[in-house]
Image 1: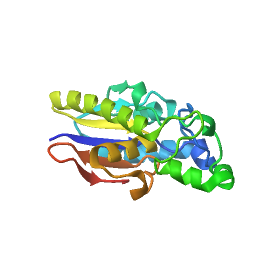
Image 2: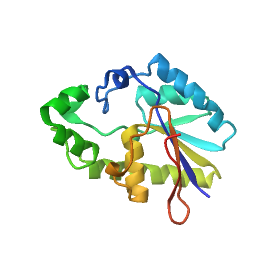
Image 3: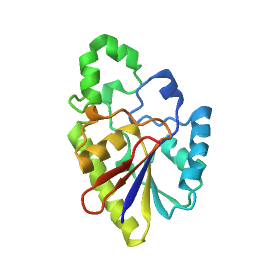
Image 4: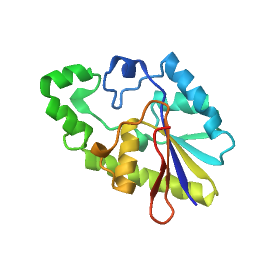
Length: 189
């Protein structure tokens, strides 16, 4: 049985300020570090292969979890949001709320950004590769990632479009089973 545990990085200062991060290399806030440490017990003793995005917030999350060797993969970065990177959500909503919500639901690409379909496919391809490696090692996969990555996994493997579920909270853990028909085991805990 192959389980994939998806852990979103802990809270960052930009999460607190409600600024879009995209691929900006932002570290964790102190509250984010506390959130991550609180998740350690949920992962204690799990035989996992650990892979993280190569951005600071995911690497720091993996280090705080203290779950062993961590491999990084640039393909697992958050979606590139072009001109929207660093912008406050409130400003985007004031300018064009429809465009913002369409982006959240995978139906709009900000200027200079990455289209949802290409992002989703990038994530699914990388995850399949890492899940295969974990399975050959008789381990589950723990992916330390971003909220958009979790949405892409749920879309790519389960057909759950981003508009059908709430965003993953910082330092939350979600699990899917890949054997046979992919199945959502838990979400956002």
